[in-house]
Length: 152
Image (cartoon, rainbow, N blue to C red; front, side):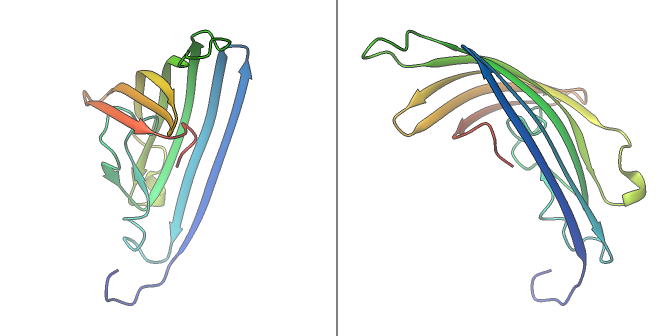
């Protein structure tokens, strides 16, 4: 709390696994955060929304004291890697489930199911992804993301 005194505790969990076989890539991941003591103190810290983080929502659109997310991302590399001027391109999709909650007793209620389809390119500055996300609440979002798919 800005300018205020507030105490609380937070526990976080992040697990990601990346596996590649040939041109195929699979990413699996989970995130969780649980708070104690001071409700609302950590609300700005626990956000969901954005590319592969409930893709139907805008970046960091939902905020709460408690957080849970599970995701699976598959993408395939296209392009001839042996050619000098070839730019590797990617086509992929994601499935995600999660939400944020204010009370620990609400954890697991009404999970949001989301997914995305995306294209990507390797650039001299790192990977660039353009994706479309949708969720079971009827939300849609376009995402332009720079950098790794393994992100918080």
